[in-house]
Image (cartoon, rainbow over all chains, first blue to last red; front, side, top):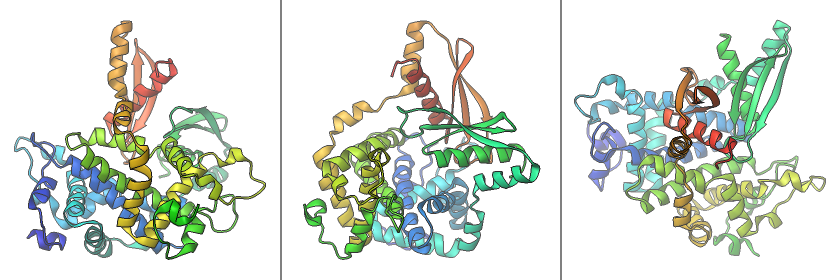
Length: 216
Length: 216
């Protein structure tokens, strides 16, 4: 498969694409810087697609949908659909175990390469035409986004348990993750989580507990 | 100050800009969806600027620099430099306390509005010309990025304490934030943190402890 067949773009600077496929096990310059760039370009493109696709959803739901679309799992899945692993160059001594996530990372790096080589609009087109349109089922994606707090309330009601979120500490210096919440079930703390906002911390701690007791 | 003076762009769809300045205390449609979009467009633009400005830095350092540049603190600072608060429309009964972060949020929403109204390149220009070039001191930013793990090692060496990171649980289902690390000082667990990678969790837990003991 040619680069054109893979990406739909006529490469100007081939070096960028070669770099995108250099796994970090290569001691020389590798694809991690391009991955850094591609990760955020993908986020931006996906955000616009979701923003327009769901005109009546609030920002919380949009964030959850975006998280799903750019999750490690999804990126690895999309990269495998493109067959990126066969293009990846890595150290021969590297075990295939160590290549976990490498396909998804290479996809992000490829997006970074297309962005630098072609600009934003062609990169948008690549993401839309090669990734989203053929491989994303919006209805399925939407139904996979779970409100863990609601699920926890439903569970506790059914099981006749009391639940209570407790603020463990508000870390004012740690702006990024300032809310530290505990979850008490029947008066006993069963889980804790840290988040950017109270809402996020609640969702996280609910999810941790639901996974622990096997509901998720 | 006119919208043109504020942004440097000739608005096509004024409604988008009006929406960008509608605080969430307004019951009607507010700026939170635009904030969702602008947040990721800003990330993408800033990532490219950092990628090009620091050609020899690895992706870990680039990530730290980006976090600083798009932190709540920085966004509020940049928004106040633009004087966004005076343009914000919010419920009259809303206390000014509740407006904490609103300026930074409005800046993200404004970026979202410019992006939808004008496209990526003009939005890039706004971020570069109105935010980064006049208000960001690269040297100062660079020196403010701290490697908390190294700082912790130095501290423990000086104070003759032993330190040990312990893996508390690897949450395999929670792909986004799977590393849960504890920090032991002289054999006692003093802090814990969750992160996307082991490196990130180490940095976080080191930072939490250093803040707790007043070193940061």
